[in-house]
Amino acid sequence: MSFALALFGAGAVEGSIKWWSRGHRAHHRWTDTEKDPYSAHRGVFYSHLGWLLIKRPGWKIGHADVDDLNKNPLVQWQHKHYLILVLLMGLVFPTAVAGLGWGDWRGGYFYAAILRLIFVHHATFCVNSIAHWLGDGLQERHSVLSTFPENEIKKGKLQMIEKKVLEKKTKLQWGTPIADLPILSFEDFQHACKNDRKQWILLEGVVYDVADFMAEHPGGEKYIKMGVSKDMTSAFNGGMYDHSNAARNLLSLMRVAVVEFGGEVEAQKSRPSVPVYGDHSKEE
Ligand code: HEM
Image (cartoon, rainbow, N blue to C red; front, side, top):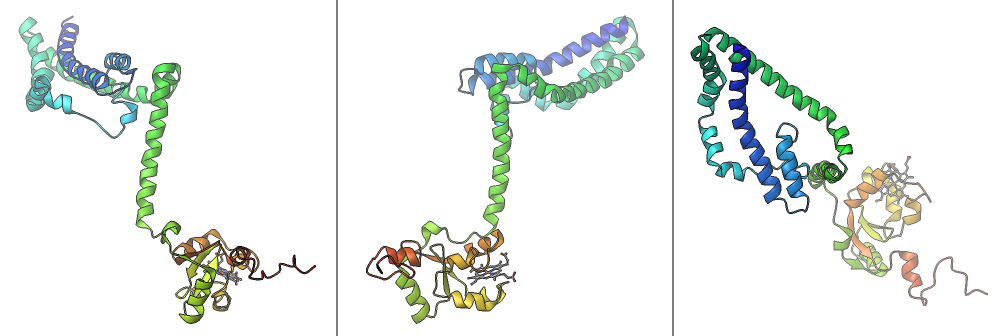
């Protein structure tokens, strides 16, 4: 009897302080700071469900706004005197209830303080584990309340992955974006190669400077050399050799310009006066 009483008394006092501040925190944040129609219901629902089951709104993963806690005098007082409160409420108070109440100091200390602490902490961690384990299944059943958070949780996770990918992407070189390249006519391109000794190749409407790459070309230097000043689109895409994605990635670092009307043939087609190689339509 003495054990049960002490257990209940000490547990209730300690627990209610924590519960009040956590419940208040969850309720306050969900109703006041989230501007959506379900917030009031969810706020009450979750504040009652408690901090142990749901730590924070699903769509705010990674962000904990503790402004309200910083302004709450009771929470601040608790925070400031945390250690002494833990010792007082966790050990001294339960021991004193049993000791002063019916002279059972040892019983109070071992059962109401130590054993209770072990039990409460194990139960708390166990609830956390069970909540995580059951979380998904339970959510499916709470259709209105959980469909939205479930979707938002997935979005949040995806955004975290996106963020990491983006971080990695920015550390790599991707070459000048095509939209930022200067536009040349096909004649400008050829002129630059013949008169300015540029070692440029035209592929799919984009001009690539292959000067530094020639010697490293896995297919041999001579193939690239013979492509200078020419539109090598079909050779690159299977006419001579069907290049891999890796080859295309290499290309992006060599971009220097784009050619008006796309490529050699298209450029000539756009000006009918220039004969198009292989166009026999006027021969009949
Ligand atoms: C700047 C443009 C080019 C780049 C960046 C490039 C890059 C590469 C790369 C990385 C390979 C290794 C295989 C692969 O990853 O696909 C390769 C192979 C090859 N390339 Fe190119 N290439 C270019 C232009 C050309 C052109 C214009 C020709 C032909 C005229 C050509 C002919 C070949 C051939 C025949 C191979 C096969 C080599 C072998 O497996 O023995 N390449 N190229």
